[in-house]
Image 1 (cartoon, helix red, strand yellow):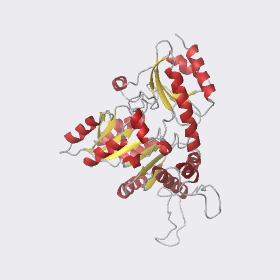
Image 2 (cartoon, helix red, strand yellow):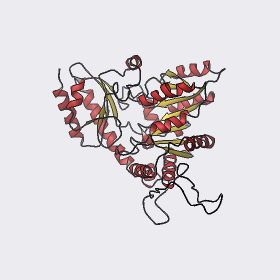
Image 3 (cartoon, helix red, strand yellow):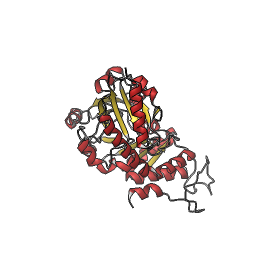
Image 4 (cartoon, helix red, strand yellow):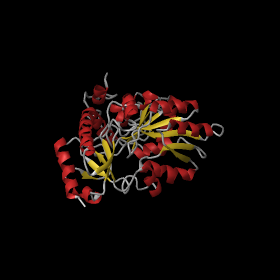
Length: 386
């Protein structure tokens, strides 16, 4: 079955008991046990819930893993993954990374003596050098990839990194939020764990906060399920139901996101008010060929730098259709200012070094009429001239 059909029907297609075409919301905390040690597969909803179970099986199916887990947020999912590691371990992270992920590594897990090192994953030789230098001590336990990265849209070759990490017995973790399994499936390219902020494209309607994990190794799945059950950051049944509904339309939504983003990138490329565009669909972008190899579309995220002809603060306030707000991946277009919003927790010096400058904005292109979006951007530029 092709992915468009898998999205609609999921891993659990409706309800066998009643014939309902949607998986029901099992809004219960506990379950009747027939006798000691005998139940119908569920005993307590932190450990397992039928609605959440359907969602977890669905993300595993879509990502082609052997199991999946659903969490109360993307950060809860990231936290569960980081909880695999022990005092003294080290993780390699990209030179630009979602601010919330950097914050939890730098401000929380560092307190448990879990360290990190920043590297540009586009330079495979740099990653190899780090792994080789660590070979004797074996402190590096994982590489954490975003591809494309947030917000500068850097591309990492998942297959090449995965081959390299396997040589050193290191996990490859890929945040696939920007692409979703509709466009990119990292497990097929050798990754060990895929994580999503399902709040974004998988949900798609800005009405749920959730995180999802998919893995391809049974032992790793058991470890992560133990962490999920022990720490308790699970997704509730109602939110699981909402997310299952969102996934059904992921394909048609992303087709429109892709189409709109390509036209907006073309518009911005011709604009006298934009000095730089970060978008993997540009043929002259550094990671274009790599991205084409591992993904079937370019996604709906565009970051761009506004030049000195425009007051960028006034520009953000002049948009009428496009909403200024955090998050991304919803049907509505959202624009944000990474330096003060999504990436404010990253130190100023690092932001400047990697390119998260004050006049950088990130646009999550929605599914509105493309002409309305282009008019909104054009009018906002004109109203914000210095």
